[in-house]
Image (cartoon, rainbow, N blue to C red; front, side, top):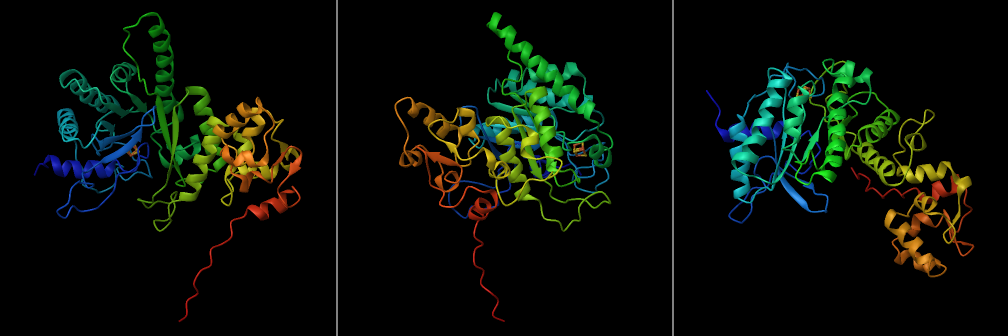
Length: 410
Ligand code: SF4
């Protein structure tokens, strides 16, 4: 019996929830006579370059897949309900959701049905209908199918806002183990193509005003954390390479939710490593905005991020010989290295210093988190940490106090 559109939507929105490039699906509240509907399948959110929150219809074109990636719920060997949309069904759904004001854009991913080219062509057809038939100008993020013809990637990129190729695993070895049909060169090829075409497109647009934009919101990727035994060092080094080589807009990290059994996978009872995922996002922030290098954040001696502290505090505790820094003399780059000082507060300090010396009381108003920063700075020559600026003592002072737990009385 063929499935109706709503049944397909339930299956294909559920299949898309493991992709974290946009991340608020899964709300399950029921409307009992009130207004609003949080249960509409596959609605999630992303943020635009100007900080607006954009709601997206997040679905798979199909969850049929010829590949057998060990960590994936949609892998070929899993016995799960399967469904495929036609390109027109996806385009019509997007427009109907848009007209009902549920969404402002589309996030379209897909399993690989028949072949990479077949699937990529159908993704292109969705965009073609939306852009040329419905004249839909909303945000569209699509997956690029690794191994698809570069010409297909090119024509899809002229209609999409963002494209992404999920590398999922940071090393060739873990790909071989968990996704044997994929290799890093095959995943890197479309990233490279998109990067080059974006660069070329930007220079052409400087000369010819009416050149069509190519992937104007850039490209991104996702890595699964905890499915393989890869260390944080491998993940952060891979991230650094991706940012440097392909100028990716974002690398997303997804704590692995065990969905399959296998000799190379964590047990089904394993909890998703959410704290590790959080620390990786903090490390990613250091790479992108604080000019840290991967091997400053983690190294061969300690290849995993400290779960007790954010990576910037961990780095500072390993490098206490560089502190305390005098707030009135430190360079902008040095200020960024102080725990508790962010990009905005560092900029404010530099601006304020042009007008005169900064006092300790000024710092709080500038957004500095003094309960962390006080161990790493002096202000007008005075140190306010209250304990010697030594790694072991500062570590102890910064360690969060464990919350008291009610003991069981029975
Ligand atoms: S190619 Fe994608 S959809 Fe198919 S099994 Fe691998 S991760 Fe899952």
